[in-house]
Length: 221
Image (cartoon, rainbow, N blue to C red; front, side, top):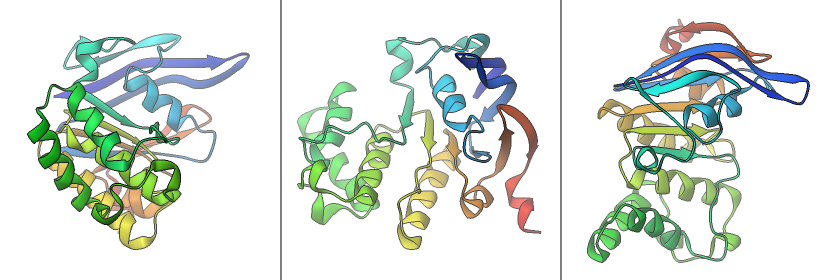
């Protein structure tokens, strides 16, 4: 399975945010999209996830077009946004449960799978706290758990470790890597060199253009 972008461009007013970018992400691997702030990382992920349409170019998942508003596609792709996109008036457990209910899970399945993923991200003890009462790092882990719980074929995560301490950063990177190596496509937008180095491959952006692409694991050598 391959998620591909070809000739992707996106403009905001007179500014070109993404400029003729080609990218491929393959199942079984975790791909890092790195670069400085303003490089276009977040915009590229939201285009690849079908949340916004490119001004030019195409996105496809195994040669099938990725289009904004495609409900069938939404069941295959999960996105972790920088703003988390959580319902603040609900608990962490409820936010995750909603994602499963939308996929048609039974109440028993929701209880079991939600408990499992909360334990994996280290939030079992605060699962019933309201999102608005959680720290930024806890909210970030709820967002990752919500994305993982449905076992999506494609998972796109925008700075998923930005507010985490070293222990929880390693925990989340390991979970995302394990998901990729189970056969999923995982893309992580990150400016953290340690996170990038944990990925199987990388694409570096600068001013909306690809400036480098090579296996991230070789960066340590």
